[in-house]
Length: 434
DNA sequence: TTAGGGTTAG
Image 1 (cartoon, protein in one colour):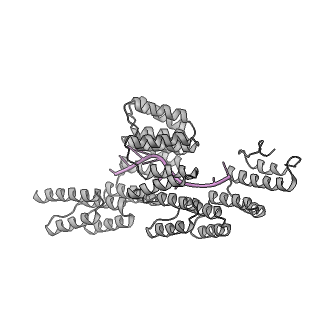
Image 2 (cartoon, rainbow, N blue to C red):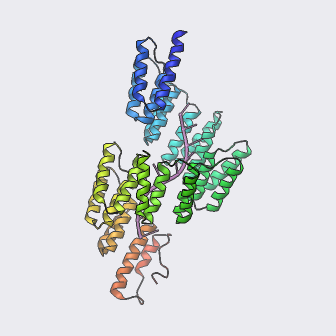
Image 3 (tube, rainbow, N blue to C red):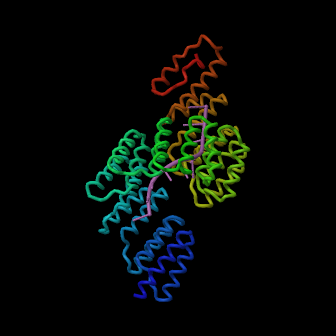
């Protein structure tokens, strides 16, 4: 009895240390407990695994799993749920699926949380149909869906552009008694903003407020971002100041959004002020933060400082993503170093990336602007994926070249046909050209 | 235990 009470107390201590990211203290208290004859149980190990997944990484979590098994304690559904969610947070989505499979192989029955996380992973892996199948399975198996289940599904549908389906699901759920949370509305507002349905997004916001919910920092950041996306900068900054006046805590998401907007407008001083505030507040030291700061330096022409940051992020164990590569390529191009941009792209390919449309578009545009149309065309022809920006950059620069060579009016535009055939996209064949 | 917002090019 005494021992059981003690383990319970030990678990409370471990949970408290894990929650405040003091993993070493959590370990120390376990060692102290063992010395006093209080043995950790499955809850202790699960708490520790969850803490490591959140704050240290999967390797540390797996080593606890190993220790747990060594101590003769079998992992349970909560152990696996923590590991699956941890792998998902670390963007090791395939690993999450493997863990789910391993859990089944071990004879452990997944619960609603396991399925929620699995659905989330499948959406993020680009497999909405499989996620949908899991959603149906949950209902068929008679498991009680949690609000998170619905939010995950609504979010997944929005992410794939099925915003109307997401709203249909949402309305049906409401009719069956589902009470939407702020998160649900945030998901829908974001989904609507992303497909340009701004009026519907504002109506959704009003609906949330009418039901007694107060918009939060996430809601504000979402709306601010969508204003910037539509180039409604004034309105976006108004939201930014309203957020400040209302005393909302600014996090990395809000800062990166607003810094991005300042950079687009060339307002470097304000971007720097925000960046300094962000650093002072110790916020968001993650890859997006680095990408944003690197972009700031590149736009200001401080490439050396940008490269220093690349070293710094690597030393923190972070890895470049598509954004990092396109920001660097663009930075080199903008600063007149086309050779360097080529070299960077080649480096990118050696690290396992197979393509980067944005980076190639930057290069196409810059080659055109530098008068190297032949090189731009060669690059264009080698590209497997192109979008409207690829075409408009090329067409714009080709036209500029032709105008210089041939004069303005009586030109032959037959060569544009081949571009337009490729498309269905809006090539700028308007008054600017003709 | 879980779900939402941030960074790139014409």
